[in-house]
Image (cartoon, rainbow, N blue to C red; front, side):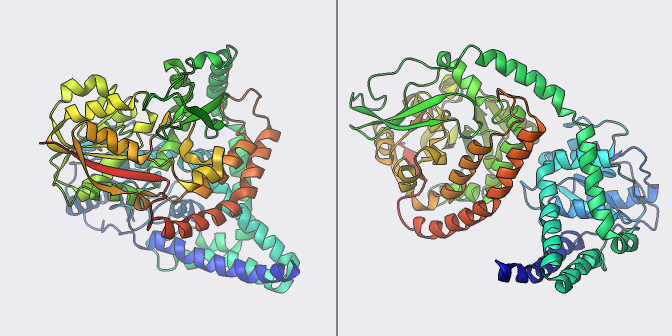
Length: 602
């Protein structure tokens, strides 16, 4: 242990330098507007934070730059933006690939934005917003103009001061304050431990910490007016800024009233018990009709930690695994609520934005067989797949269908050309014969009647059209090893876990011919990581969740954060292990998911 502590100052100094270069790279690419000469403007709308002043020559320069670069949204960054705010901006997702990355998310500088009329008409823009609202607007507008939103430094724009309360609100909206506070806390702990373990090297690490802003901002497009002061006093000012931010958060807990209302509503529902959310247990397999059923997995809701116990049974006749007894419609409404919307909206958005490579591989699977003109993504959620698939198929019209309101938001964003909200089998007659590709990505396992969904797909596809399905693989070895904590079981939302041979047979019976299958390549390399995350989530029990039966006291919040923080190194280790295992799994047939591409008879 002493030898490890002896190396800590060196490791800390290396980390400070590397992180300094990383932050420098996040800001160093920014273009600087040439606003020396006045010019015409008025073709774009400007949103200015309260107190911000934008000279007409800067407006003209911004419009000229946006027009020449083909931009619809331009976030303007003051050249003299303070060190603290500029570093927050660099950490919030800003980077050179922001413009091209359709799913990138970054908070804005919070001062001024240029917005094209075609985007402004789809988002309610208020006059004189505060800096928190203005910074958050960049995130929302990026979704409406996902390949036409960028940043630029505006020399003529003065920097506004940001109060601790405003900073707390901005960080909470962008990343969640825990994620924002964790890195500096780790840094402070490493610095203090270094000084105690190796005083001389520890003092060197403190000096390097103080000087780091010089590394970040030397020759940078952003030139903080307070740079020298922040460097000279960083050992005092940086922790003090974080302390004031956290104190402001404690004083302005605006979320409390809303959560209290939700907690009361959930308590009233749960007072009636959870048995009413289930249908009677069925005695036979919904896939083949066999009565040879046995319990396969008994588990709880490990994602949201809502009350209830769920059983997945396995059919000895065909291997089908299904929820038995299954949830009724009231139960589905209860357990889906606040998962993809409401309290879970930000987590869901983050999760669905994290796998662009997976979306591209899915879209590319049809390339050897067809050039799609019309594509319907069933279970399309908020349209993340359709948005990324446009990079592969830019001329294709992508529509989406889903039960939730997310598909309407996808249409508003322009991620799908048209969004249909409702039950797929009920809409099939209206959509009959319209599409030459139809996809179901991790949709079929959520449905109550998979055969009806496949029948609807056959009806909606044109003759010779292609059906692309991806579902969890119940034959995965990880499913047997991890049991309850294997994420793809996902109770209570996953109602059917379909063996590959069963799905191929069902497609063949409906006039489809399977033309391609992905097994190992469909693996998402997350089994151990998600099992550990589910275990930590179950142990820690987030006290802020409104269905929790006990109030969210400071002690329960501290316990939750401590457990999640303690598990962070293990999550990193499990993530690395998953990535290594994926190199083997992708060459075989045992991944946690599989894809089937089938062509309807012409």
